[in-house]
Length: 109
Image (cartoon, rainbow, N blue to C red; front, side, top):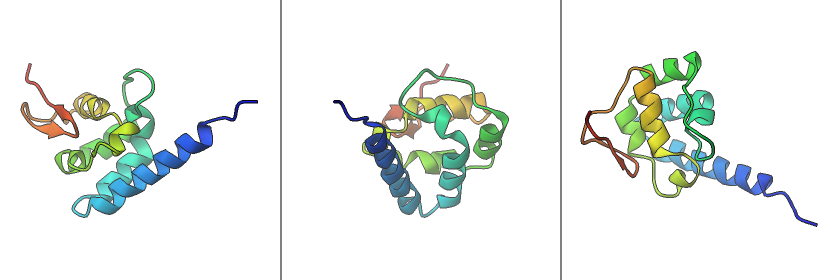
C-alpha cells in the first residue's frame, strides 16, 4: 500500500515559505502578501498560467527585486523563479533585463 506524498509536500512548502518570510526582513510584508495571493501561480508544478487580479494587485504593491533575493535553492524546490518573473511581467511589473530573481537571470527582449 503506497502512502500519499501530499502531506510531505505540504510540509515542505510550509517550511520553505516560512524560511522566506523570516529571512525577508526588508520585504516580509510583500513576501507574506504574495504567498497568500500568488502561490498557485508560482508553484513548481504545472504550466505557467496568467495570474488573477488579486495576485496582480499584490505584485503591483510589492518590492519584487527584494522578494527575488530570497528565492534560495531550497525555496526554489517549491517556488519557480521562472514563474515569479512571468507573473511579475504579466502584472505589469517586469524585472529589468540582467537582474536576477532566484536562479533566473532576466533577459531583455
